[in-house]
Length: 328
Length: 281
Image 1 (cartoon, helix red, strand yellow):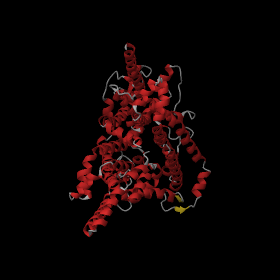
Image 2: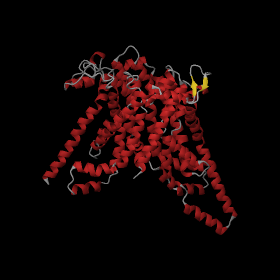
Image 3: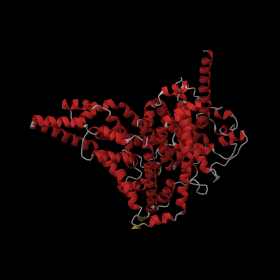
Image 4: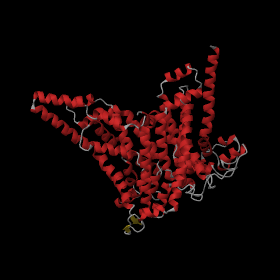
């Protein structure tokens, strides 16, 4: 993430400018000028508020109120089918959550998915970026190839892979390919032991193009002199990668890790379309559980309690990673 | 000298051969999807064990005809483009205006607003969908275009992108306009906005692809067919009898091709949107 404090500093009105106009005022003592400048900032203030007003209104209506709503409803027993049946429940939802086995399963599945998908997807993205970093003719075609699953929607990809993952080697493309090298057939989506791994593999394939683009920008920012110096010193490609590329990508890697972790925590569409959270709850994630409790079972209050915890976890995670990223 | 030339030839060969191999394996699921969409139903799984499964041997457009006859395509596209249009209006018009105000104008609450925008940028929207749904229900907006699109008209990420772009516009330019008697709002629309085409194009394509591909919110806020978007239609088509895999593949292809084309034509801005935000710092 961009170092925010830096841009703030850049923005704040330059002290020299303010000083000079103040001293100008003091010197000339012209009331007229003072009034004009006063009017100007006043005008700027009105314009600023006018121009931000639509955003302020919508930000409040569609982000801030719902955030407060999540926290507010998490203290209520609120059945959607009976809107009058909203009763204050204190911290009982949270207490229930502590002993809810399904919540721990969802948490565990989300963490499991993240731990597998983050390193896999980021490594894949880095490899792809290294493959297409050259400026040779036609490289744009290869970049488009690696990026194409990313512009295809997750819904499309998930449906396609349900068909590709078919357990029958005569109808599933992947099992057909594996049977050629003497493997399988695997029941990718119905075997509780591998169902989540199948989703990990597919998600990394779909998402890697995004991180590849970020890595490419990072690679382009490494000065070519560093590579020239390294090759003069007789460094082989592996050394160059370890001692020039990786250190040069340090900040990019941190940023990529952060966005990939946060993205992974939100897993929903893939299990919803491919496995419905099954088999044996092995692909039920936190967002899936929020959806199930809130929209399928109608326990809005309890679902908001899960959502509040989810919100808290993601915010803490992003703060931690942001802090790690900032240290140079 | 000669060995150096040979080395370069080898590097070239490795680059093309390696990328062609990895690239083809990488896109093979999508190639298979497109190929299957042009095959008669019985051919789709017939030669799955052979490489010819990637080629439609008996080319047909029948699957596409089936999709068009079973789905109300104008309605689906109308809903999707309506949704995208409203979101873009909010993001490009209101979002950019706010980004400019944050970057160049001094007003009360500016610091607070900027902090909020930055803090809300990484907020997981999944955590607030339930209360947002209740809010829409209270407003009577469930299963309406307003309920679908209005909550996503403001995107903190876009505001921040506009903000950081406008920071780099020289103050002298704005001051010159002010001396010419140009008000702040007019200065923005007549002088600053035309200079910022790149960032507008970037936000446009990021929003367009994100909204076209969006699933969870449209899935929650709409019921039935009247207001459903492309992704919902595709998802419903997958589970509707009769299950014809050729037609499903045609529907998947139809849902993906527009984005692929947009990406190919606006690649520069799209990549800038993804990479620019992370790397600048």
